Length: 152
Image (cartoon, rainbow, N blue to C red; front, side, top):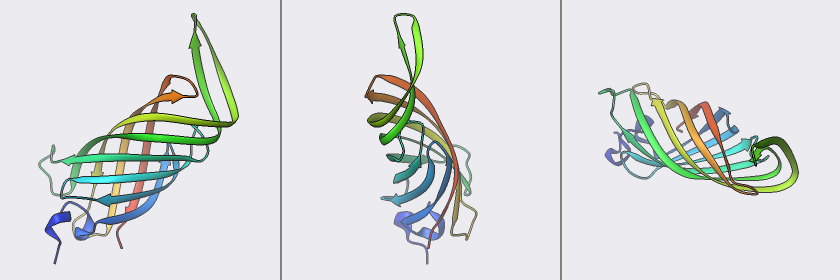
């Protein structure tokens, strides 16, 4: 029997884990808190810092009038530790930089679509986001990721 509290997640489960490719490339965890809400934690390799740890809070909604595909949106933050790459723009002059021992802190907005085949413990997702770096310098970048999660 499917737990109605987590009815939008695969098989009504509230926890899934898997892989994400893109920004970042690494591991992904998803914790459903309610029928249409979830926390996602991503840990992996990124231009923002390696490793990069990101946490997002998501709202899922049925924009496609489908039992399989859902649109989601959310916000969160990212912490990059270690080597990072970036771009500074100052006084009409821009340059790329690499930091080997930095600590990056940023805010993130995300929009995506997830596909959960009926009676399956699998979730597929594609998402795009905007990352606004606050430290070590102010800047912005785009994030794109594709992935899969398994719900045991």
